Amino acid sequence: MIHKILIWLGGYVEVRLPGEEAERFINICRTKGIFWWKIRWQREGKYVYGCMRRKDYYRLRGIVQKTGVFPVVKTRIGGYFWFRRGLSRASFWCGILCMLCVLFVLAGRIWGIEISGQSYHTKDSILRFLESEDIYGGMAGKDVVCSEIETKLRKKYQDIGWASVEKSGSKLYVRLDEVLLRGQKHKKQPASLVAEDTGTVLSIVTKTGTAKVRAGDQVKKGQKLISEKVKIVGDNDEVVARKHVRATGTVVLRSVYHYEDVLKKSYQKREITGKSRTIYQIGIKNKNLFLYNPLKSLESYKKYDIIREGGQVCPFLSYRFPISFRKKTFQEVREEKTQYSGEEAEAILTGRFDYYRQQMAEKGCYDMEGELVIGEQGDRFVGKADIVYSREQKTYQ
Image (cartoon, rainbow, N blue to C red; front, side, top):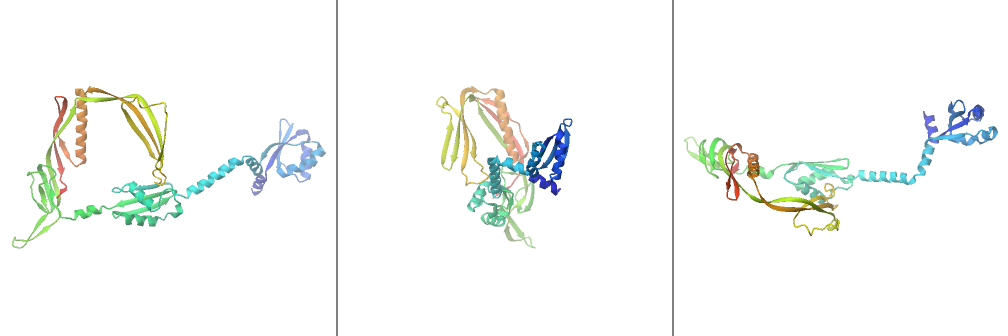
């Protein structure tokens, strides 16, 4: 195996000889120590093909003069010839070498910072803090010390209870777990549970504090449901002390909300004409370059919509590369005064009503009842509904 590898590295050739003189030629070569392999006859014995080393080919001159047979090289095989062919494409190999060098340099740097787990703090604020501590996209990966970055994050943000920084490849992963210290501190303060809305008490379960209402009572907005004052009674049913705590419990109110929405009959109908103009903006720091077609003008556009696309190039990388690319499209718009039909108004008001009920559900309301009634009043459509709903009270005072 090693012998074959050495022959390939040194290079060998495939030679063609005329069939009638091939046997004598090969025998003379063997007597002079020139070895052949892969000898084969082709074209009905007219030609003989065989392989020999590159250095041995140059030793055939004396045998050629003696026999009058000239061996023709058909194929050049091996590392030597591969290298010689590569020298003729020196610019290509230089480009490959430069590309490998660039990849080697870029692979040792940080080309992205991914932040996850935060809720109160934004990614933008955390990235700017890391920038101030010289942690940015494009920095050398060897300068990143994950333990130091974790310490700086916990020291800067007191509400971050756990921080993990991990370098994986050419990317830096920052994982956070926030602890709402303000909320925990606020929960310890004494306060009373009060009603958010006016309604009827469906149920009340008191854990701490003193219940001020019962199931079935009518309450007004802001009225105390569970008081923070707790009386401590002695053996003789005498009040020996009063204590202020944070009232906790479950109170559910059944309330009614009077919903009303108005839609004018007449409106300006907008229609896109199809005429548009596009402007490209390239920004570097505080300087901008605008590219557009000067043949298209906006002077004839009375009204138009502006559509903006783009932003900072690679914003996840670093704020130290203030390069931005934006595309602005101006579309001509024609407005025509028209009126809603009854079906169109009903569809619009019903959609608004459903969206409002969805918002109420997101705020904790459930068991909602009530239908929307739509009517006409002069130059407008009016939708009204009495929404009956239940909600657990969570407002403190």
